[in-house]
Length: 483
Ligand SMILES: O=C(O)Cc1cc(O)ccc1O
Ligand SMILES: [Fe+2]
Image (cartoon, rainbow, N blue to C red; front, side, top):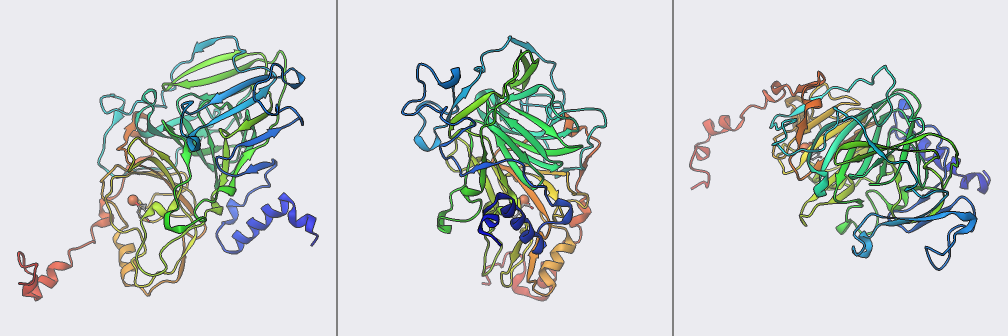
């Protein structure tokens, strides 16, 4: 094979897919199309991209005039004086600055979305129950990505820059002459059904099930769909996503920075073209109109840029001696809270990996922890939830809600021959995790897709200890020290 072919993007994509399919890690229905776009790899780099060479000014950002009469606009997403590694900004060189519009009007509330999760809000519900939802139906009438947003659960409130919301989107129509901008926070989007072709101010991103993308606060985007589309969104208020620290793992592993892909500049210049820009601010929706495309950025540079990531590139690590490691090893992206010990939100995945530990109980141990765990399934199967947990479903446990696998899985994991197995074969489940207890929205609470886990799942977890006590006096109550 020629070096040229081996080096081509198409070959790299196909090679990666062929390998993962050989390993049985990608079920045939999840095989992807070739991505039509070019990207820049890295994470939190200072990227630059120009659709016309020579547009980005050299030696300064804001000269008196920019080539071809373009306007300069800076987006700053951190405090101006934030520490360097968290200082986020981008310089855009564009046909018209974003301020060139015809004013704002209020839009009616989207009754399915929520942004105030404080329990005194009568629209949210507190529950210690393990809750779950069957896959939400994608409407048959025409609905685009923005109108198809619905909120499941969350914590906090966006105007205080403190909190998190979890949503689904259910859409079957592309956004026409309509862009969306979330002024509240960052969206981490997880398509489950249908690819999203996303036009952003920085260039296009093509995101298919098994991939995720992050579109940050204030960045305008327009979503085209290819048919009925469903997915999940993790929205964060008050932080941006970062890669987790690697600690003793060293310099590589988990999500590697070079696998995050950023768009290349691509501009669209239109005149007398009626566009709407839909803004979300404080959970409310507003619209501004303008007669030109908002995607008119010819060149840009900076580190505040939307990106995508292919979850099958995640480098799983685990124990190679004994015991099941805590799920923090599955963290793809994390976002800081103001508590130095606990993230605001983590995005974790459970994807195909080998499980080789000796005399180890392999399913997640029975547990209760501070984390609120909201899980979804992109494809395949995931144990430990109600039988009805299927691709497109949601399951939820608030912090300190006990959970773990049903008796049958416990028995198999404890008694069957030690497996040398690939687990999560052909499946990707994920978890939105937060140290903050979530409340549940009216939309999710009243949904006919909601169900509780059948408590009978755990009925057979009988007390084995009492039988030992009967036969062994030293195990009787109050004599635990063997004295
Ligand atoms: O509950 C779950 O299924 C998620 C999970 C997985 C794991 O490996 C350890 C803990 C945990 O919460
Ligand atoms: Fe859990």
